Length: 250
Image (cartoon, rainbow, N blue to C red; front, side, top):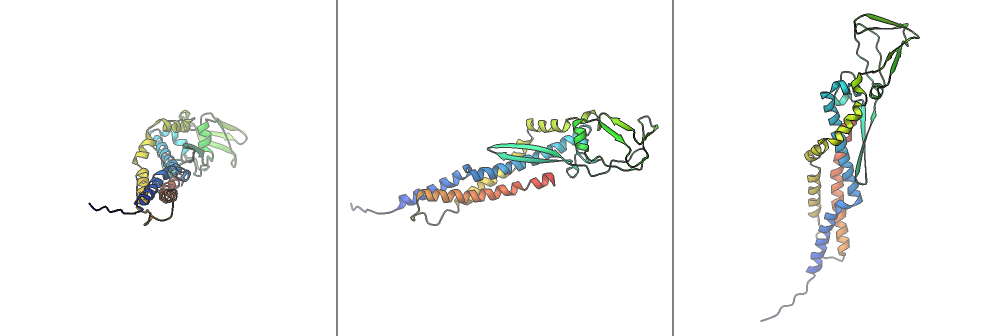
């Protein structure tokens, strides 16, 4: 039987191709991809928390009306708070700051002078006692709960011990804590297509293997090429999710 000996570099070619594929798989473990995906998940968490607070406010307006503009409870455009997320070393931190109110306090009981409660959210959340005195008028005028007119001369003041009502003190902070123990973030992550798009990004990188894998480059070089290619596509996907912050804070 004749013996045919074929000299080929198929072993190197296969090895280089496998190294490229391995590089694509390893791309999710690189620092750059970890940061990009982590920040994308943080953006989803910010949006999830914001929606959770809006929902809670609509369900319990007496507790959370103070962190929205007047007559805007639960409405995203009326939020008197902004959420900031930070990703570091596999951990997400969400924090919140209050905004100043820019709308006039609704006029009631026949009063005509208009004013703003600038630090409405912060003062009511802390349950701080408020003293109200006449500033540009000779006296304060309002109606009591019984409907009787009340005049407070300039220099005197009215003390409001629980502005916004007893329910508002620390209500916003408690809502944030409830979010942590709720399933809302897991639900929103499940709804998100982020991880499916990351898989598609890796598949796309796999299809972009160099046309020739039998050249002079080493297996390590092909692995690095696969890693860089996949990393680029994954970071592109992650950036689209990072834009979600604009929806949270306007």
